[in-house]
Image (cartoon, rainbow, N blue to C red):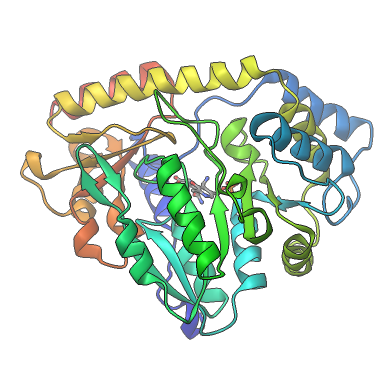
Length: 383
Ligand code: PMP
Ligand code: GLN
């Protein structure tokens, strides 16, 4: 492995999912649902395959039906008007969208300011682009992890090229508020920064929290690359259909990179996701409601088991603090947990540059059937 990537070995998700299989544990580590998305959408993929739609290279930017559906979704949900021909790009999941955006927009030596803890592919993608990551740490404050806007401001230097934002935020479950997003937008405009914003959990916000796309703030439309994914919203993580929306100059830069990474994304699934995005609002509402119920089951179980629970306002992850259990090293805790309790979780330290700061935090996924979550909670109570 070259020097830029030497620090990145196997992803924690692969490691922990393998451990779950090897030990027969309940896997609350890697974030994938244990029930697939809507039957009618699966049928749409089968129909496309059978009818020979998408079995040969689809168009580079994505099939027109899907680009139109993505633009319609942005307009319907957020009032954001995108031209499907020039302002939308279909990617191989959000992962490719993140990598291609950074490779397209970052020059070697540029600084990229990212919220820490950060989703693991951010660090590797910044490194692939030759950039330097500058983490701004979300810290526990009154039951959730919050961004310190002064720290964010102080992290921006003359070498900063872009801000890499994620809301709703994996792994903490934080949803940035309108006031926080306004401050981020003002900073980006003032310092003339680009922003890449990963909004793959846009449909998973609970209670009073609301998801507001950064691109909708004044001065942001022209400097923001917004990333979405069908994997999260429709429970088809294996299909690897994601997308980017941005102004034409930014989309064509990302497309220039994408064409040499994967050239195009798998065809038949694009037809199916186009239909999924047109599902009625009731689908999205029911999906959200079912995840909210699961959040509450797992949060209650973890609290009863003695963890400090940071109740997430969004995503399908719960971050906990293991110190009340007399533990302090999340890595050691997660490596032992399958043997001790038959449950797999993720040590948040992998999402930190400052591993010490992340050491006491452990993430549990709740995108699992309710009975599975109840069984996991039962096992954890016996710790
Ligand atoms: N961003 C975040 C914050 C994620 O949690 C994930 C994991 N699903 C991704 C991006 C990657 O999404 P995809 O599976 O569409 O590549
Ligand atoms: N996004 C998922 C998570 O955070 C994992 C996806 C992956 O394994 N790359 O658990």
